[in-house]
Length: 127
Image 1 (cartoon, rainbow, N blue to C red):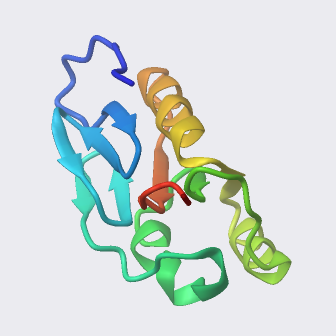
Image 2: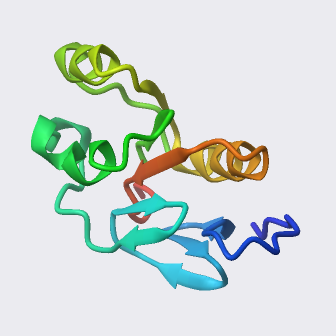
């Protein structure tokens, strides 16, 4: 699916998504990644919810976003509650949703001028 959002700010926005990819600023990515307003971290070294550790969130926490959006692939899965509590204790919001919903939500929040960060799993759908 192609997303349409007019953006002249020069900040990162999701421009599309589909089976096994997301596009940021018209560039397709097929690996798990972190998207920040002014930075993309390719090849985020985690590909499933069960692998998540607190240190995986370090690049996001370093920029102190208002909210972190975790995209868990094609289906909604929740990380360990202790991880969420640790992030919330830092005064940072945290939401978990499927990756496609994260793409849409990130764009909306970013267009409102919110300081948002996304960590997403990008993988082909289960067949």
